[in-house]
Length: 415
Image 1 (cartoon, rainbow, N blue to C red):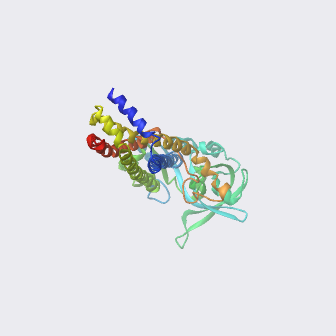
Image 2: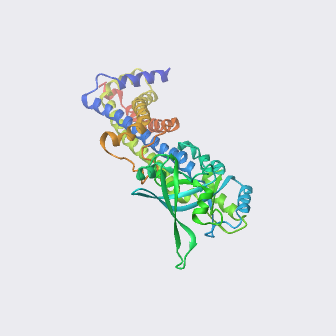
Image 3: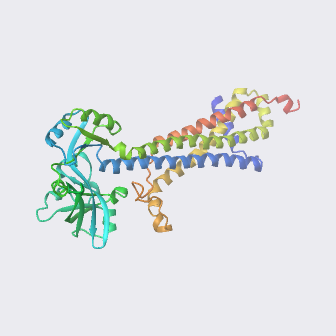
């Protein structure tokens, strides 16, 4: 019964029409402050979730978890033995031989450098997810009887101003050295079989050709790289180091952490900063709740004294004013939670059109791995933010509530 009465009193105090203008303003400011803080933090955390999702879904699905490279510049001596040893190694799910070479495409007067990857389409699909970003199947690279084919990034295609079916030249350095100890330039014509578009930096850097064409172009004896899919991306370094120790010839191992690990660490670091910001922003809003309750206690001293003369215990007064602060915070959390959730769902659409609407490019795809601000709303984040706001408002409400319970009815009512 007392709990029910404390809720009724808290609700009546919170919605009292006898508040002064200043008290109403402080009450509104405290509720608004918590709402804005909750809204901003939900949006920020959703953006961090979005970046992490896009990193996993786009970048890490297009680059292998690990790569094993031959120390010999002409390729592996025993490719079959290397592949079999890697397939037997623990925590390795799939392997695919490949050739990595630096080259440059030219089409008319246009020129664009690229990292050209020679792949075996059948095995490569087991390691990375290429085709969901392509407008063609990678198997088409195995059917280049008439002329060599290339699948090229959207960014490179844009620089070259090419379309599907165009023929362009690929220039690369082979592994054979001349009398000066330098490799010779090799130029070969490729027909554009298709494009891939991830919406980020990868589109500007990569192109795929058949592994046999890549070996011939670079004058390798055999492929110089093996792409590896690991069971746990976060443990890729340990997995590949263990696997390399079992290989028949010395090799070098690299992982996605070497190329993209800093980005992954930055995302997690910013997430931690967002949680710290959450505590600070909501703490400031909670000070407004303290001010609001102190003013409410000051204005309701007469009513509190009457309640105490009618038999109200100190515990009831403490509960009532504590609940008053919590209800004010919950009101702000509801507004902020709804607004933050709705805005989080709109972020990708709005930011992707910023350039069209205002001429502002938020993320340059030449620098970042995507060209838009992603968002992934998680209910757990909403609950954490709202829960922290309510708990902190509860803690902030205790002191004013205790002060209210110490009012002397006799002195207040001049008895």
